[in-house]
Image (cartoon, rainbow, N blue to C red; front, side, top):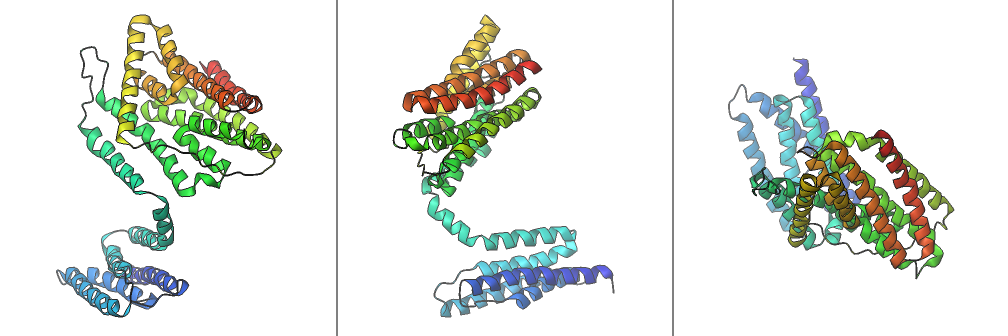
Length: 416
């Protein structure tokens, strides 16, 4: 007898046993009525799948016939069990079908493929409760936003022309829409994280994941709270600085996606600036009252069609302004655009500069303009904290910016 046959037979039994064990544990743990099969049944199904696939070389269509027979048996079992069980799902029956196919995979692919598939099945079977919790958290509009994201990425983006559509060569629809998808995608991740984890879990969660959505929104919201919770000044400053700490990381990610060559210049400054900033954040944490207060910050869903179109207009306008400034005014014009754009939003200017640095704009000019935009954006957030909060909070936040963004700026200038 071939050793491979023995190995695969044992592996099929083990994989089937694990899936069956998960089904049995699910029934025991949640005190449910046994509906179909357990460890032994699933082990036999996996072995049956392997033997059917192995026999297929001797008896053509044997695997297909076996699959049909198993399917009929599973349908019959479902009908019988659904009569006696009030709430009957089909997960176990489909798991049995997949287990049969996993056994068959052992003859058609390396064993690692069957093992990987079994692990995925176990993972999916085991997350039912988590999925149900998320279903309670994620609203219908969030699902609509996810669908819109897929349409924007996989339907609209591929059909857009990757070339300038105007005589002056200012507007490339593909490039503009790609930036929209990238920024909204990063923001959407933070938005969903906030929806699942809940910003009411405290300042840390609201700050970190809120920074992915909008560090400006976090800064404004927490600055307002200082009037109600002045004794938690450092806690609120901690949330604002955590949100702001994401800006450098996010900027580096955006540069890397658009222009990896440009990222190399900023890699060390981003790392050094982030480390310096997190050291100060650590100091705030250990010297604060260690008390947490709920933060219920309202964020807009980044995948709203209206918001996406506005974002596209902003990106397109920023690209056009930088191109025209570089063409007719020179570097100084680019720096002015970077300064003004950075006051409102750092994403548009960084992505625009990163893109244009591959298409005519001087690398050195793009690097200096990006530095100006990041400094400008940090100053704008500091002013918002002063306007909506108190001077004591402003002093702490400015200290963070001087340490983190200051270190980043010095490191960048040394490299440039």
